[in-house]
Image 1 (cartoon, rainbow, N blue to C red):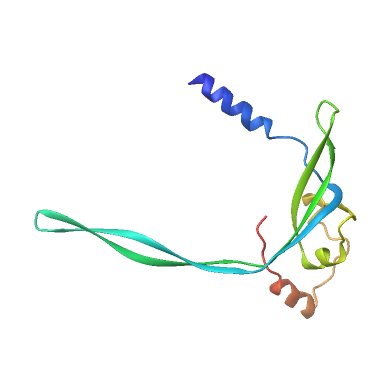
Image 2 (image 1 turned 45 degrees about the vertical axis):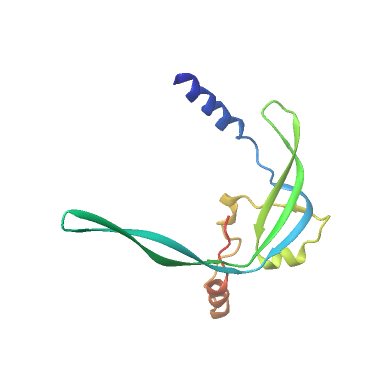
Amino acid sequence: MKVTLAVVGCLLLAGCGPRLNSGIVVSKKYEPEEKWIQILMVPRIYTVGKSTVTSFMAVPVFHRKPECWVMTIHGSVEDRNGKKKEKTRALYVPRETYEKTSVGDFYTVQPPDKAEVPIEQHDATSEEQLAYREKPACPR
């Protein structure tokens, strides 16, 4: 048991490493909005006298994946030992970033801790509030 846990722990730690935050844009892909319905068969169990009866009820589940813009960047990162490794990373980006960036451009990901700090702070105009509400949520 201990050996199994040790092997699993090593495998998990092997996946850890520095993340690619800048590189050359090697591909761009637009993922259109998708909608689909999944039918789940839910069992219903009830008793009649001394016997138990199982029946199945079809329950529709509606799914929606919003449209997304994906850019793939390729670059090198330095690991803990100082060795450079080539890595590729797919990024979900806003439409504006997708449209103004071309394949072959150098792109740097803004760190999450810096993304929340506003450069300029002011009260949002009604246009900014409307744009914020209309912004789709992409999976990350």
